[in-house]
Length: 191
Image (cartoon, rainbow, N blue to C red):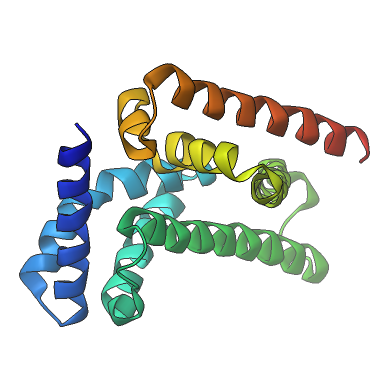
C-alpha cells in the first residue's frame, strides 16, 4: 500500500511540474483527479453552492496561473488545499465586507440581512484558530492529524505513510484530535 501511495504522490508531482511548463493535457488530468477533493473542501467552507462553484473555478485558474511556484519537495494535495483554503476565506471575508458596506449605505433592508454569513465568518475564525493550534501539537501528533484529517488519508494509508503499525498511527491521530478539542473548547470558553 505504501508503494502505491508513493507512486500516486509521485505522479501528482510529475503532473504539476508538467502543468508548470504549460502542458494543458497534464492540467486536464490534474483537474479531473483533484476537482472532487477541492469541491468537497470548498463546500465545507462555503454553504452557498454558487459561491462554492465559483471558488472551485478560481482555485483551478490559480493553479494554472501559478503552477511554476509549486515546490516538488511538498505534496501537491497540500499545496492545492492551501490555495483552496485561501480562496474560500477570501470569499467569506468579501461576503462579510459586502454585507457591511450594503448595510452602511442602506442598500438592503435590515430584515434581509443574511445572519448565516456571520456564522460562517465565525466558523472561519474557528478554523484559523484550529490551524494555529495544530502547529503547536507535538510533531508526531501534528503529522498524523494533518495526514489523516486534512490530507484525508485512510487509517492504512496513514500507517503506511508514517511507517508505523496501524494502531499506533491511529492513536497518534486520535490523541492529536483530543488535544485540539480540549484547546478549542478552552478558546471558545474565553470568548
